[in-house]
Image 1 (cartoon, helix red, strand yellow):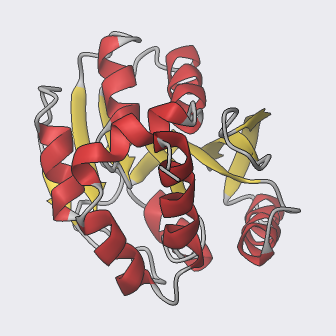
Image 2: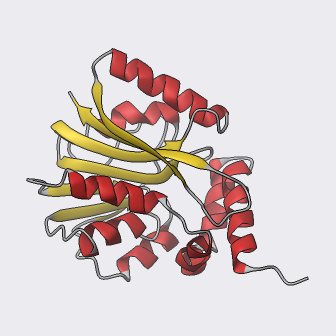
Length: 219
C-alpha cells in the first residue's frame, strides 16, 4: 500500500523524537530538509503560526530577533512576511541542510548560525543582544536540553521576550521535566510568564498532540 505524505511526515516526526540520541535525530534531518515544509504542511503544523502570532502581538519596538532551532525558517518567514518585521533577524540551527533551505526563502537574514545547543545553552552571540528570541518545535526529546534555557536567555536583553513552543506536561517525560524546570525559574524570578496558549500542534495527524506557546520576559 502506498504511504501518503501525511503518514510519511508523521512517521518521520516520531522517528526524530523517539530515536536513540540527538546525533541520530540530526541524521534524519539531513535527508529531510528539501521536503520538510511540504510534509509538515500535510499535518497542518501549527507551532510556527502560534509563535509568530505572539511575536506580532508583542513586536512594538523590537529591533533584533534570534530564531533558535529555525529549521527551514518557518517561524522566521511568518515574522517577516505575515507580520511585517523589518529589523535584524538572525537564525540558528544545528543542521546545515535545514539552514540552507531557510536561506533560500530570501528573508533578509543578517546571520545564519550553525550551532549545536548543549546542556549549558551557551550561544556564539553576545549576551543581551536581542529584544526577542523565538524557538519553535525544538524543546523536545533529542533536541534542545531542558537545562539549556537559562543559557539561551542570556542572549536576551533584560525585559526582552522569549517566545517558545513545547508540549504540555502530560505529553512525555521531557515535557514534564521542562515545565518543572521552567516553574522553578519563574519562582526564582529569573523570568516572568507573560502569556500562554494551548493548541493542537498537528490537527491533521492521527494522534492528538497538544502544545503550548509561552511568552516569557527576562527579569
